[in-house]
Image (cartoon, rainbow, N blue to C red; front, side, top):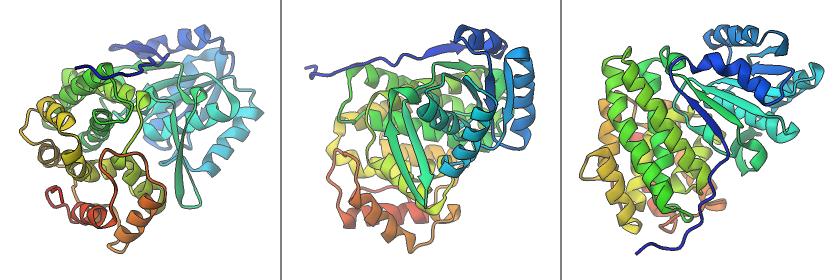
Length: 356
């Protein structure tokens, strides 16, 4: 039996393929851009981003290379001043979730068109969702203005991504699809995308770790990230994302690594309340138990599995539980302080997942 559902496809133009970055100037022109600002993180990414800015020739407004993790509002304000000073009318985000988040924050405030060129598997480029940090708290919102107009997926841009970063970035993307399978507003179409996205990433990530130069594996990971990001943009989030927002915003934990550590435990927590979703997730992973399979995949990829190794103090567990309960997201299983404490304590130690 097919349950009633609502499906609203996201109006994002996707350009996928090796060498697709060469189409950036024509995409800026297609969107009517005359002053396009390229955004990136500092360091090595900034050098490549500068090349992109130069490729835009007379349509370039230069580069802002100050994007950082968790999209702090003060950084957005710095970029906002530059956007206004240079008369920017188009945003070009080159990088992972940090850069995409900055572009989204600017677009929300100024309603400017965005072109995103992902270099990781964050998937956030496919969502109308923005998470911002201010005063040690991370808040999220959804708005049509946040959704990028064009995403260019070019495997050439991801070849420099270190295997260890690729691993946790891909696990982050898998988390988007995993929660979509039991989301309150799930649909048959999103379930199909979620399964295919998880399957693509679960097969591609070990290949990237074993052979970093494998273009086919990296292209498959980009494909999976696109599908998983589409899932996140189409349905609501649940316990896993809430926990990661709390841990990232309050304790400054690294985004993708936190998703990797928490995901198996959040899935185990929800397993009793979402058996069909768990069966589909396990099938996509090619395992018998979804939560344990995710834990073992992280181990196979060499990813850290303990929140204590990411900088969470043990006393932070109680604080994270309190914040999660104070403003919870919808979840298929009711949230209980004792069970959540057990979940986070296991994640803190890096133990295998278990359902209370």
